[in-house]
Length: 259
Image (cartoon, rainbow, N blue to C red; front, side, top):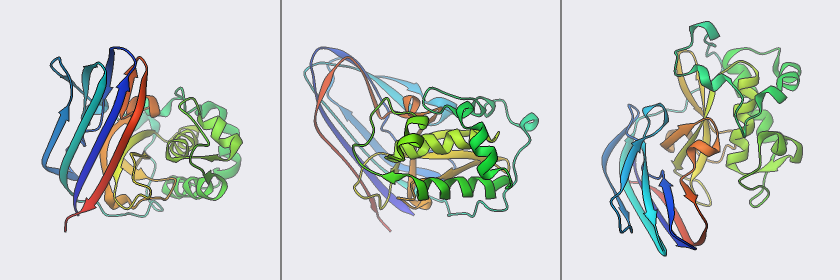
């Protein structure tokens, strides 16, 4: 699938602030970069740093006054939607070193709080069937409601409230899988056919020896996702972290299919 992604961010900084930007899609084995370009309004030189697990990169910017960033890129995504049922778990003692940290709780994915529920609800299942059942439970029991959560909402908060957005669905999904001893990390992505268009959050689950994308919200096809960044939870995959205060003026995201 040949996809073009575009993002435009416009903010007004209340005072000079450092900004860590993560909106450049990441070239990987399954999403081949054709071309991309990042344009940022900044008086000082930009500094890039690698993203977590070597996926993508982040860009440091010192912003003052009106801040504008634009990104566009075209990618060939070679990923088919695959059934999770039938995929085996990797024994914890056989996990690669860089996967092990995704077994543990994090700030927004309090997996240690879900151990009893996960064992009771999904303990009769194994491997990919267990992960699929978790995703189906989340879709059936949590309502998608824009504005129902904020940047402080955790997996426990969403589980109790039974409502949230893609970020919250992904936090619950990652917390469930980690509680079952299955590594999971959050993924920020551009998503073809997502309505309304926006940055999207999904989950990578380690099954049968590699990461598998799971969209607990079911809002976009897996084969139309373009990865940006990965991490423990929303803190690590935020498209923009502002070390200061700012006012949103306008923000647009679009993904179009070219073939």
